[in-house]
Image (cartoon, rainbow, N blue to C red; front, side):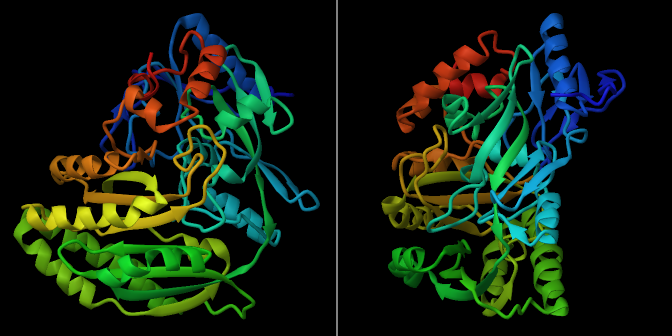
Length: 446
């Protein structure tokens, strides 16, 4: 593998401000931050860190709510690794460097008439950050972004560069697609892609009890199904996305701005701020907001259907439960909110995914439902999140690796049948724990 011949840009602790994540709930002040511009430079950064006895963490766009990327050692920043290395139409793959943001990947694929099969609902994340923490959308047949990886390039603690796929270093590939930054630094990812297609989205308000009664039907009959329940109400908003022959019929520009910018961001931001200052008004605002929902349908290319702008900052907890446990868990969550003094301004988001074969995927080995709860940044979230976590863990829930939770290695070893496989590989690839931090010590053990 050749290098560019340039030197990785470095800033010292004295020169830089503390790193903060998107939500502002995690910060770190590394000894130095480095932005390598090639895999050769990245390998050199790791070798120097070993010589200096410093831990190393790579950071993406900071959209995780955990301290997975926090370090007081060497922080590897993504902006130097942003090349789209290859688009192979015949093979149906695209290879990109780790710092490429999903929005850049989407734009490049669209220009070539290609698309990912599925994705989450934001696209500011880097490809390595999104895949390493298990970012997912919703899908009957198509899973997380990591499940669409066909190969990856991993730089290990000693500076070795491994190419990993089902055929080459398969045991590393089986784990490193969702590696939590514990096995090495992902420098490039190859995704499976397909010719761009159209999705028709049907968004429709629906009563909570109806959604619960029809949940399995909707999840089975639609390629992509999700819904939002508005706490303090009996109202949900459902979204069903299915492939379409067209023609394209995007959301009209004016309505899109009103729905997705003015209401979902501007007005919602103001409502959250009012609710934080005066929690007693939240149930009234929720009822008013839920009554304002209206149905809409539109047809567009995938990323314009899957993703939406998220400008209101929040903290989040999300658990993956067995699909058959979802309705019971959601009903108990609703009952818990109703009998408590909690005031929740954010809707609860519910999505689904098929089982996959990635060792630490939240959908590993089982059909899965995701239940996500949010609180406005700066609000007191602890009581709510603690109650939700109890409901989810009683049903064998697995916490999203990039979202807030309190689980430790003992619990996670019981929740993941292949947990030991992952930690044994970690022992082999990073025996000196070059990539360790407090978060990884908690969730993986020392």
